[in-house]
Image (cartoon, rainbow, N blue to C red; front, side, top):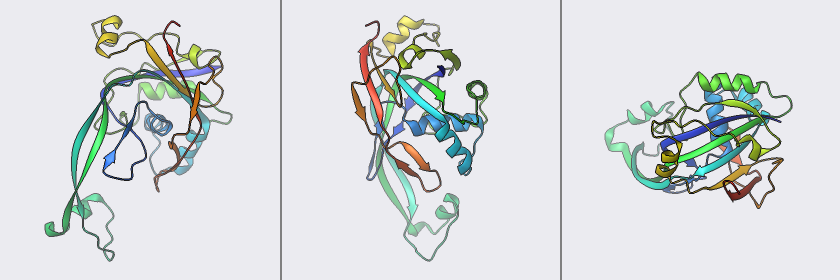
Length: 244
């Protein structure tokens, strides 16, 4: 099988989980919606193009190798919002904040981020996918829109270094190491990124050369971008030690 493989590193990343209250949590690894959003930005698919987003969603099968989940940190966040006025219709955030200042309210939230996390992503195409893996490689090298790791305030801090590899399964797709992205060398990078040697694989579909140890059902399968709707999907996990 052919896989598109690339790496993700940043001093900050935030892989959103379902949020219903004041605490906006981050998963330890990029979920399906985050990976599809990153590919869509690289390919130049706009957020209102539901047909293209659906084609990308249905056309790719994703896997993640977590080498370091990073250190979880929290940000105390405040934002201004207008008071409830059912008679008012505002098209943009700017219109909302242009209301009278005495009608603005402040909401508080705590947002989680992953500091110095490092992940690798493998993507293969399903039948009927409109894009080839080579087209995705070129898009990730020269993205149409800026790429970020979950939030706009979290840009990648290392080259994605996308490439196409042939492998018999998920583990084989990640077998080839990436070059060091600093002058320190890969061994020092491993130490600074707290890479203990324990890695976790998360994938959907057939893992090929990996057998699942458990199956989870994250709520990260996008349904409708305009209405911000998601559903659950099966995600298989296997944790091991590199070299084992």
